[in-house]
Length: 394
Ligand code: GLY
Image (cartoon, rainbow, N blue to C red; front, side, top):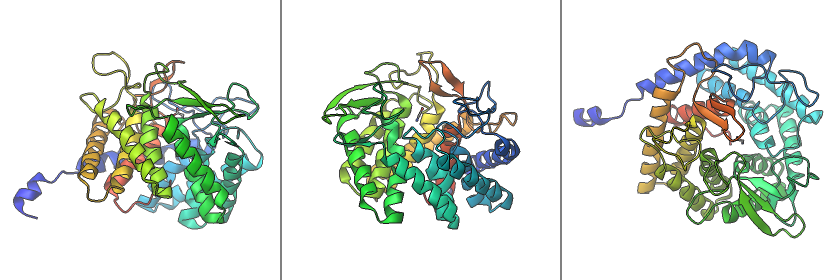
């Protein structure tokens, strides 16, 4: 490299330092998080044991976010080869195998988030058959949520619940990779068909003509007719919830990775272009994209971390096109801002990796806090940037 080119080359030293700080925090959490699962978000910047609910004790493996902890452990183990980290991650397989065997809190589409990271990943990395068996059980439960004739996976609640029946949400796109994996490992076409049909229904109906997304969308469960969009965690039914848009970027890009449908790649680009167009000065989205600088609203750093992973994934599928370099440069800028101003790299007292996220502002839950998914996707984003040979868990 010429001296001039060398001077111009971006340095990743600050990201390597941020990665080292994050790894130290993950290692420091192992003893506690093996004894109990942390809550979805921090409280005043630190994780506490998961609240007791639905007959399960405090710290139990319930809810949609517990799989992000083993996900973080696998990212750290792959980079460091540290046996203590691998052992901690393998212990997680026991808990997730037990959860699916005893059918604890499975009435959700979030089985994809939960079992891709906790069980598909150790099966892929280490050939753990017990993990494969648990992940396949979870994939079969997810298939029970595939509604005919609508061709969608119901997101939340019991299938007989009239308020939830026929409803799905943009986040569901991240649960679909469990079905692609199940199709590949079993050779069964039904998993693949459900994955593609669900993604196609979201592409058609959850993305609005201007490239924004609804958070949730309802279908008539009897006729399959698409009915209406709305929100649950966004500012208004007609606004664009930032994390939902980020799930759209990453979820449609992953849909393209697995199904090779060009329309999924185009959907990911439309979601990305709107997300990027609404970023404020420091590139970290406000919790709903209707807000920007001067609004006095909170950022959602977790949406930023998810978007970074989605933009890198999207760029990988665009080959040499100029758009690929643009999406990569945008992702780099967001990640730099996260590492510099939103991570706990300079705040060794926190048990989170990333602060200043929003879980659910309308319900005032987890506002301006860290979250397990924010931490996971921040670590994945650093892995993608610093370890170009990292192979996706999704
Ligand atoms: N998937 C739930 C959320 O993003 O809040």
